[in-house]
Length: 128
Image 1: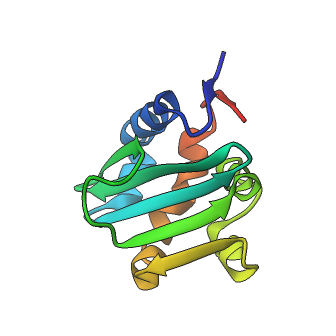
Image 2: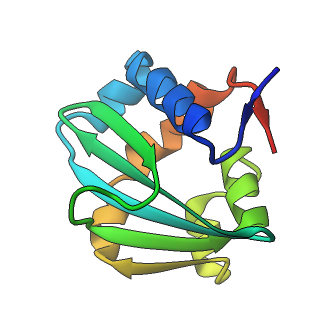
């Protein structure tokens, strides 16, 4: 049985998968970023945060414990398409499916590690 998308179990599974993937860690290098994600779902808003520091990832549900570089807002269907690698972040942004507030340049610099995420997470069993 898989982990429920956007649950505490999901954030832990994503964190573990990324931190054990050498290709992702190599792409991340010495970059740092703190991003708040806001997903508008039918049952209400889901929030989680992503922190990249020293080649390691931390994720958690709710609001980031640290000040963030950027906040990304999207609807549930867009979040699922991004998670399943059916949509790229750039395409989602250009088509208005995601909104970014904060440091867009910081997000652009994360293209390398973000591009490695689908491969690093491909074996994760997620219930959408």
